[in-house]
Length: 298
Image (cartoon, rainbow, N blue to C red; front, side, top):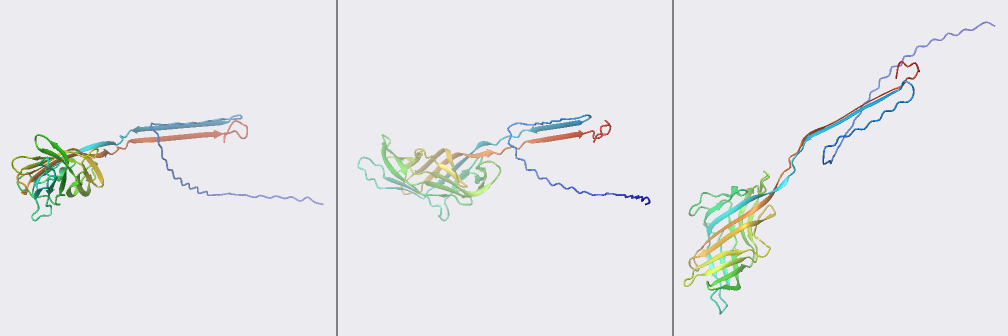
């Protein structure tokens, strides 16, 4: 039987294209009171001619921001005007000549409307300024309106001046109409009605000057633990000072009224964000002599 020879040759070429796409979303929320940079690495090599190496580096640098802080912006209103009437109620007492009630009437809807000599503002209320002070200066638009003020005798008489203390039975409100103001000083203007309220239960001092019918009513003090306040955009700002006076030279005739009110309007200085940079770097190398010749490491 003869010899059989096999000769097989085969060439194999492998070509493979690999497309690798990595999408990575990072959402970092760091609450750290100070700068922090940490790094940790470990490299271990086993066997002959093995190599393991790692390098890591982190860096943080920043310019700190400034936190926000509360502020108080002063504002003041100074108003002069007139009233239609100063009505004196019947006196039911036998011991003195003081009236039981005093009604101060404002005709804000009159035609023509009542005059005002001056409406001033400073600080936060600068935009309330009216024309320069002068007799019969028209009311600004929108119209200022004042509710009637009803005062009831408290029964306290101050001798020998024949003066008496009276209290208001309901809130007394001055409405400056719709205004566009920046009361908190943060640069954002808001449009709303600006109100000033003297709360129910506040005290007024009435002086009936004998022998004539003259009467003068002066604000004495707010109700206990309930100061007057401005209201704007749903926020009440307690007044830091208030003075008012009503005067009638003759009972039944038109009198004059004046008041000054001041307040600190609360706001906040917005925080200033800081600037900074954070950097992290890492590198690693690992190699092993597979064929033992100490040459090529893979």
